[in-house]
Length: 341
Image (cartoon, rainbow, N blue to C red):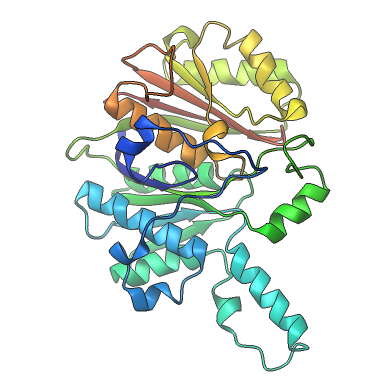
């Protein structure tokens, strides 16, 4: 059964909600982390409800709304949201209030809105949907597992499925992770450039009008023994999807300006990807656990438009197959393969 990406929407550090603007100009950061470019939420949600929503919830609800609008769907058969961090801003608010009020007379609102399934629940409330709704929380595999579940739902006639990848970066979180060397304290220090985003996709067994791409395969690989094992896993993944490495027109890699973590990607460029066109997608969105959602959005847009953005030179079009290789900390590796419709 073919799994189609019927529509998508993305709020990210790029002008991704307006794809025409995204293809014209690229946003770069001189800071040590990317922040999302947020739209005017009044055009998506009632202003009274917006005041009760945290930043990440607004991002998720807006992206989901645009995704459904683009597909001409009022209510999906199933909703899946993937996040590793959940609602960090509300979590910080709740913890601060616990300290300030000495754990007495606490309002439950911040706690209720800090749970990982807040975004999926809020989407269901707005759509008045009582259909299947699940939130996947599995570290850097959260989005990949949501994609795997969406395929199972579609194959069992529970499509179309609305799938989202949502994570935010806050000042508190960035400060803590910078101390462990995970994120950069400044542009000269070691670590990843942090990012965030909310990307949504409508997956279905029928293409609908103007589908973006076909999802051919998804695979996760935890702690490969060495780079040779990773290379072998990539080739076997392509073989399982009836493709050779020469048939991959573009590879989206997880390079993130971190010498230690980019070493694995650099080795792949010298070996298995040596004859492929590659692009480091995290240079657009930064690093966060569900960043592969941005990569899938980016790949799907390239498949649909079949031309490079003005700032992306030296790449051959049209594209038939795009391979996404994502990894987090060189532990959680994942592969996503999409093809032209």
